[in-house]
Image 1 (cartoon, helix red, strand yellow):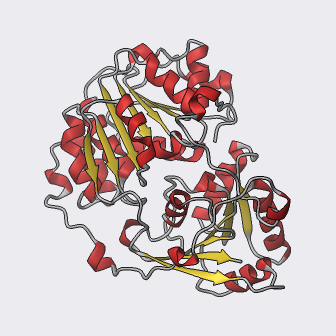
Image 2 (tube, helix red, strand yellow):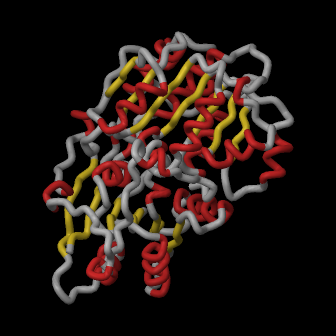
Length: 401
C-alpha cells in the first residue's frame, strides 16, 4: 500500500484505524489487541451446489456492446455473477451505487463491464477514476480492464506507489478513459498537475471500507472534493461497517444498495477451523507439520506485522519449503514477482500482511492460515476470502494460543 498516505487529527474522529497485533510481546505492549472467542473461527462449509447463484440471463444476452460480450466469452464467462447481474443496469444508468458481496464474486467486473460499455465510441479523456487501497489490487483491476476492453479502443493508466513518478507523469500525457490507482500516487499526480480532477465525472472506491479505515481519509477527501463535475459515485466492498454509514452518505446521495451478502459474515464455501497451540509448543513447527501434508498445495499465511512475516518466511525457507513474502516494505517489483510465483505455484507458501487480503484474485488457494488471530472480523473475512473463491471450496485455519 502507498507509503505516501497520511492522516490528520481531524479525520481520526471519522475514520478509525486498527491497532497492530504485536504477537508474542503483549505483556510489554501498552496497546492491547482485540481477541475473539475461538468459536467464531469455526464453521462448516456449505456445498457448492447450495451456494451457487443461478443467473436469469447468459453473457450473450447482457445489454452491453457486442465487443465486451465477445471478450467475456473469451475469458470463459458463461453467466454473470450475482453482484454483476444486479448492479449492471443501475451503473449503466448512471446511478450512485454501493455493492456488498463476498470476495471472489466478481465485484471488479461488476463495475468495469457497465462503465466500459458507457464509454464505448467516446474519445479518450479522463472520465472514470478507480481508487484501490493496495498496489496489487490496482494492478489487478487494470489487468481486468485490459481483458474486458481488449480491441475496443478504450485505454487506461495504472498509477501506484513504488514506481517511477516521472514515468507516471509521462504516461498521463497520453489521454485515457480510465485512471486506476492508489490514493497517495493519485494525489501526487494531482499536485503535479498531471491529473485534472475536474475532468472526471465518475469515481469508483473499490474495497471502500478499507479505504475509509486505513489512514486514507485525507487523500480520499481530496480526490472527491476536487471532482467538481462528479456525476456518479460507485462503492464496492466485501464488508459493511455501520460506523462508516455517515461518511458514505456524505460521499453520495440516493445510493442504490445492492447486497448479495450481509457484509459481516464469512464465506459459505470455506471450511473454517482453529488449531490450539499448546504450552511449550512452537507455532512455527506446527505450521511446518501442516504444510508438509500433500493436501496443502497452495498456502497463504497471514501475520499481523512485517517483522513476523519475514521471520516466518525465513523459517520456512530454512526448512526447505518454497516460500516468499509480501508486505509494504518490499519494493513493488519484488511484491509483483512474489505474487506471480505464488499464482503459478512456483512456490508453495506466500506469507503476507493484510496487503494480500484485499481483492486479490488468486485461484486455487487450498488453505489460508492465520498465524495470529486477526485484529478484527473485517480483516478475517477478507483474509479467508482468498480461498473458496468463485464457488469452489477452501479451508481456513486460525492458530489460537
